[in-house]
Length: 124
Image 1 (tube, one colour):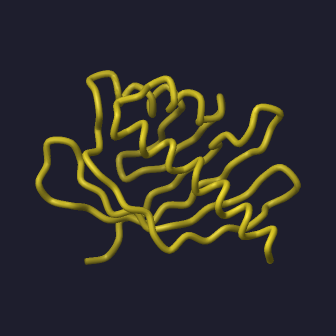
Image 2 (tube, rainbow, N blue to C red; image 1 turned 60 degrees about the horizontal axis):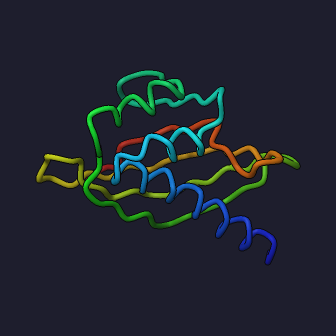
C-alpha cells in the first residue's frame, strides 16, 4: 500500500505540471509531459498531443484549479491510471467548472508521460 501512496504522489505531481502549464501558458512543459502518442477524449472530441499544446498558442487557458479525490491504479509494470476531480476556472471566464478526469501515464527512461486523458463533466 505504501508503494501505491508513492505512486499516487508521483503521478499527482506529474498531473499538476500539466495543469500548471495550462495556467502559465507553458507550451514547453505541456509538450514535455505528454507522450508523443497522447490521446485525449473530451466533450469536443478526440485530441492529439499537437491539439493539446496548440490550445496554449494564445496563452493560458486556465486561471486556477484544484484537484481532489485522487485514486491510482497500476495497469502494468510501466503504466498507471490516475483518476481525480478537477474544479477549475477557464481564463477569461467567471464561472467555475468541475469534471472527473482519468489519465493514463507511461513510465519511460525520462520519467512519466501522459498517454491518455478523458474528461467527464461533473454533475451539478
